[in-house]
Image (tube, rainbow, N blue to C red; front, side, top):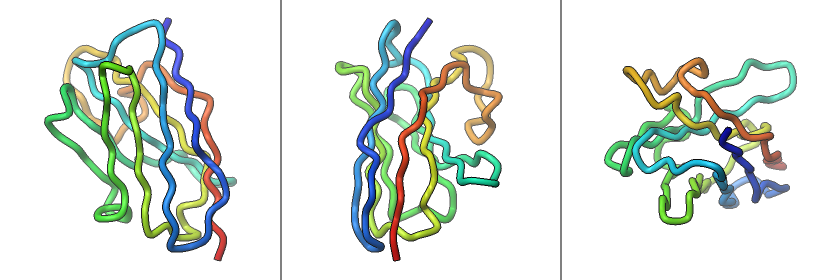
Length: 126
């Protein structure tokens, strides 16, 4: 079973930048999609960004477009989320996830992902 481990979270001031990473072991994900989700206390888990196989396509939640960039390095089995111009509303526990690897892919839906990391906390102060 694949293991996903997020890292790089922390406390940052509003307007600052942060890059979080997701290291994958046990499998290679060069041919399937990867996604980032986040969840704040008392809130439902929500889609943030996704990247398709080989990095050909990327997708973003409207509120993070132009500020966040998702990328992947399949040689290192690592997915990144570069976050800039951070806002207090971005504060959440961020999870990475790996697509189930078969069928069609509705990247916004958590149900489309088979493997999840433990999450890394991102806190943006005002």
